[in-house]
Image 1 (tube, rainbow, N blue to C red):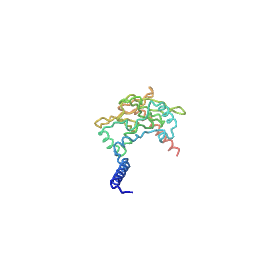
Image 2 (tube, rainbow, N blue to C red; image 1 turned 90 degrees about the vertical axis):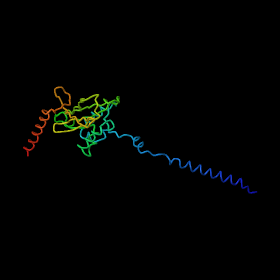
Image 3 (cartoon, helix red, strand yellow; image 1 turned 45 degrees about the vertical axis):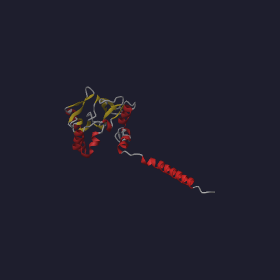
Image 4 (tube, rainbow, N blue to C red; image 1 turned 180 degrees about the vertical axis):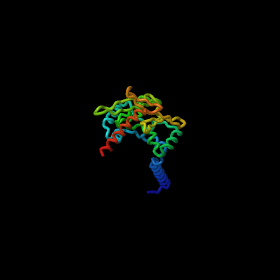
Length: 229
């Protein structure tokens, strides 16, 4: 068999090109670009399911009322991405609340004795109407605990209102709301219960008579306990 140098060189060249092609295709997946920003934006946003938290611990009637309220999907609890605080408002919240400003700013639920009737499992919730996508998609609903085995009563404080810059607050007078402006100023109103009308309002002053009545009852209770000792 005669050695053909031309055929041999052609074979070597063909083999080299084949190896080069296979190497380039093997490296292609490693060259996929990474973008930290796009990865963050593609991550699913965390949503809060109150029924899986300890919020309703010791309050099964409250859990049942909330489950019934959100059961048909019309309303959901407001999430962090629903709120639209300005930089000035965030700066104010940081100054007042320190490192815990986020848990206050993006907390859409709270509980306690809201209507001053000595039942402490009332609940207030900033909710979103899932059928809307405008600034007035929010509402604020309050569930009043009832004596005995009665179910919680539902009362709307606000409907179809922009609550994207609103936070809950508590003081000795009871529950209040703080609504922040674009400039970071907070307008405070006090959540008052009108027993005669069976409705809530948010006013410039607290219903001090109801709050005082509760404090007197508590003082009587503690005085009686001390007397028994």
